[in-house]
Amino acid sequence: MKTIWDKYAEVLVDYSVDVQKGDLVQIRGTSVYTKELVKAVYKRVLERGGHPIVRTSIEDLSDTFIKLATDEQLDYVDPVTKLEYETVDKFISIGGPMNTKNMARADLQKLSRRGKATKFLSEMLMKRSAEGSAKWVIADVPTHALAQEAKMSFDEYSDFLFKSCYLDLDDPVAKLRELDEKQTKWANYLDRVKKLHIIGEKTDITFGVEGRKWISCSGLNNYPDGEVFTSPVEDDINGEIYFDFPQIYRGNEAHGVHLFIENGKIIKATAERGEDFLNAMLDMDEGSRGIGEIAIGTNDEIQDVTGNILFDEKIGGSIHMAVGASYPETGGKNVSGLHWDMIKNMKNGGKIFADDVLIYENGKFII
Image (tube, rainbow, N blue to C red; front, side, top):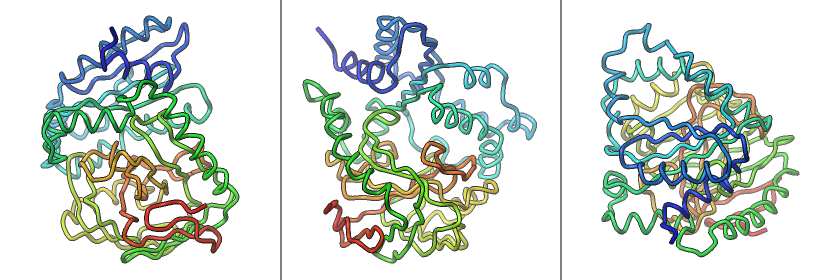
């Protein structure tokens, strides 16, 4: 009899990255709590004829590294990791944090320096993904830490996670394909748009999107999923945008983030809480004050902020904008070690205009 982990693994292996016979598959588990899903994925990769390699870690090592690493060590990327990014066919990364605040007191300058040193790895993976030579997906398992962050019991959070992934259904992949069909219609419409104009609380901002590709996200890179996104034209973003939801990155929080953007660069960034962290991340590198993504969340199973960006950016009735790196497959060209998705509620009167046509209001598409 299939367990929930077997069902979960089949979606990740068969659908998300589509493991084929002979594929080299990296399975990464970020803590001891990922054991059951890592094991189920490992088994499924073998059944599909792939060659699984498992990379697990102890969560506290990241904190220890940032505390003790010298500048030389912060700048060093080992050749084994580099080789894997160059040669692995499919990447499956499974999160399961023991402590969501593990890096909350980490040295911001050291975090920034490490981000600069490793950004070429994410750039390489994004490039390979755009070219079709690699596929990747990230997913999470329920943990007590995530449940606490979401202000739920462990059982409540487990139910929430599985429903968000449609794993409560007999055929979650059928639901993902249905979601993709609906989203693809919106993406195809947006592909013909030149300007996107978003209005909301303390928000009036335009994004040039001419010539950029909109992508429907339905479980191929993130699981759970539910969004349509693109990377806007780098120097054609102007206005202000306010994020009412808490913005969380690497265990740190910024609340009431308000960004002012001219010709695609953030010229001013304020926050009601966490402003120092916000600006430290925005000063990470040359591209970190650019805008890498604009997206519309569509997963109606997710309605409230849980403190987990994998879920929160998919909230039905929200948008999110990423500062930093863009996606090459959309035509994006901004390069950075930072990619921080910031989420905004649109159910309180928010509107989106596409070439002056109202297409979205109060959290819903109206086209």
